[in-house]
Image (cartoon, rainbow, N blue to C red; front, top):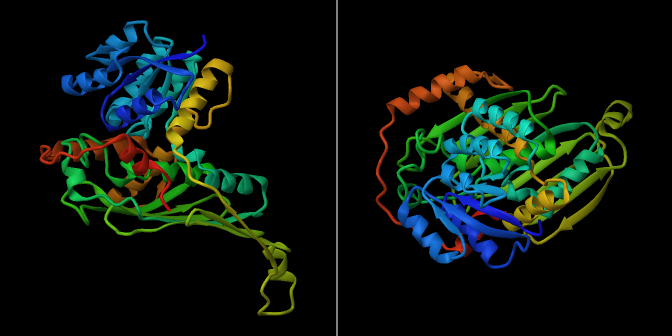
Length: 390
């Protein structure tokens, strides 16, 4: 096999964006051979872009066709696991858009199906390809910061207008999307949180519903996480604040990292702070530090992950974002929702039955609005929307 024959399932904003990247020659080892969407108009437009691809009205028909070696799933969140599991049964490699799903049980079942299938499984956590975040992970993993103390991430530059939410009846609904900022925008950041700093053991969260928009899901979130080691994390995000901030700070007993404005700033203590604390006779000493700064251009991570997916299939290369990792960020968001709904701290892994009970109640009581505004999304706008914004 010289190229991966790819079928794209879902020709909305994300599916079209990926298709354009491939057609523009950004993914030379991938050939799009099949497209599927239940919306005839979207499918027709996608077919006009990619005239060599066969068109299918359902994902099942595409997978049954034998025209694809792999599928890229870019449909509403609830459908990610179900389509992925069917693809695994067909022996197809899978790249799914984020989030992995809406609730952890369905994602856990998807991961189990992936393990049984033996095929390649990846998730589009494109921000893992950013050199700044990769460098932060390298430093933390190396032990340079010593024993980790705290992560604080203020990422409030996910601004969205009311027109954005009104552009689709599924947007910002429990039935259509499964949540708000935590399920749509912040999965990238929640993934990076756990990828760099590790998974918390418990969560206390405050999710404000419709604080800045006329929507029935959360658009403003504050999460407090605790670790078995005693480390803590604070995560703040919203789609209702402009111009917003993206500032990640990680501290440990041997130093500190600050990621902001496209730079990674590193302070390395010449002596572990715990040693200084209990051995120094000066009550007001300030530990000596060495300072370094790292900067790099933020790339468009989408084609990077698609190329990595193709390389994994063709050459056995290690995946940047294995699909199984998707359950980690979802576990944090599920715990945050359940904590906000119950007013209590919630342990991870989350109580799946309790979470699904609350989510089902919200879905049953929800009144969905129909789309009223058309928002045009070009490939350039898509790239700009999902790149790392400092």
